[in-house]
Image (cartoon, rainbow, N blue to C red; front, side, top):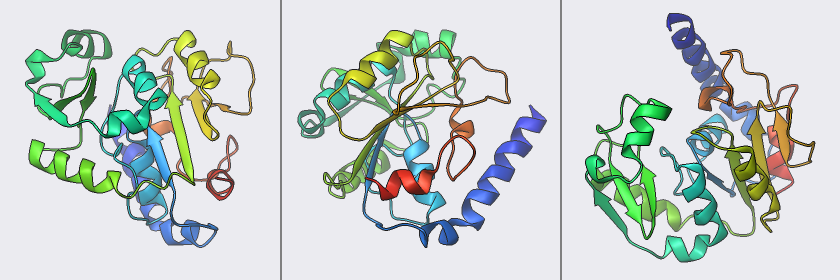
Length: 218
């Protein structure tokens, strides 16, 4: 656990230290990342850019995320309705299967028939304000949809994501059994997990992916 903490701290330091250098390599500064977890927010911070997506500092479980991005403009027009964590349809699963020990300490909201877990927010007010403000920054002309194999995601759900008619999409996975695709990035996981942990998703260029090129090609 201590070594994992040091690894995360080191990656955060590198992420912020070289942010302006990475930013200088971009051909655009306005683009939107719709992500099932915190990766999008990490990318904006890695390039010292304003956050241009409502899906920052939160996570959405795979089945709900697929519904969300399949009809995203409709969902974004719905109102966030905050509920008690004990009322969450996925609460037991999150605590017992995903083993999120923080569940119950952060805001949980319904967006029509899906749930959103604002894991990096301390109040419903802040979560609502940032969600609504960042919705207005979405750049529909330069948008990337990102998914990974975290939070109980099945291979069938990954395949479902790959079949969606979205121009720019990417999957991070450690699963070698998935067929190769231009939209799949297979990563190693130093923690030995059967999925890609958020902090092991790439925020800059590495041997698996060129994040700068990915953004420049949007």
